[in-house]
Image 1 (cartoon, rainbow, N blue to C red):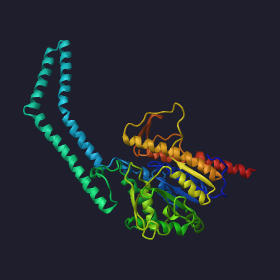
Image 2: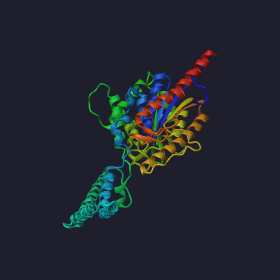
Image 3: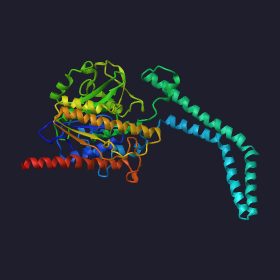
Image 4: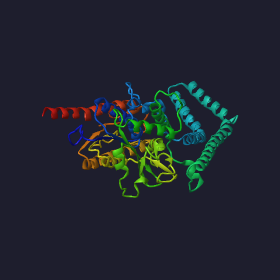
Length: 468
């Protein structure tokens, strides 16, 4: 719940923040906000929240959820999202097979220990014939393994074959690295570092969410998905032409530009807001270096904002964006990604747009209390998810404090407990409830939390105000 009373007369904004499965939680929250008829003037987002904000701004709630709680984030294809890159998975499997083959002779010793124990036990219980048969079986097995020479011949060859498979994967990765270098940004440093790259892959989220955006923008048309720039242009036309109509809202989205070392903020705004927003003086240089008018020269960059927002710092490869020649960056090619602290930046941007009360939506649960510790994730991917969720929690608290100083009302929707990590698109075990949880439940949790923490308290406050 917020810090002050809600008023439908004030200019209201909603900011969606978070990574990965946070998009499922946001979908449930937006469904509740839409059903309750809460007045919203501006929607904004970073990370997974960019996809939510894009669809929410153009009355695209039907693309974010259905009656069964399905969203683009709960699609079965999303289970491949934020997985290890295919080259790393194949190379890792090949090395694991090679290592297993190398230690296979140790299995013979382990088998010998089991046979010896069973033979000794048979002798102790007066079964000498059984003991003799076990020893004989072991002797025949060893003879078969070494004469003909199964272990000395087949194992080395299998090891070489597995290592050859790893080498092929490395070569393919090298060729792809060279090709991407020719078509994208040049890189400096030793060649082998280009083969490793970022550990996680994000192709599936970007493709699935761009499909959802295109299905809404194209309407009844049956044409195939066009180039990203065309999708962005159609989206901007749809939103700009319908601003002020029910279900359509002004839009602000943000990513971080790694090359410029500054944030990029894209916006589709009404005439009055647009003039004030892009005329601001930036503290670190010209406003055009960080503010992108998606209705002007940047109209083809909207899908780039979506794709870049799904990229995580260090964990995934950043997304390359080619700026228009008539923009501030004059055709430069920069790489962009998400930044958890963009939540605070979006609060400041919405304050400049005259937003007086703000709804912050995050899938990051409240900070832990004493004796609330749980087991840490053992896998690197799990630890990355814990790190992302921890940073989201801190960023949300910072954003709430900043918004409290800049606006008259701040309302926060967040779960009390969220066992589903940012990268857990499949079922996960929840220690607190001793059962499996899935991303689909997060949609329902967002819906219920929004009613409990936002809709019902606001309705009660408005009723009390009318009673007075």
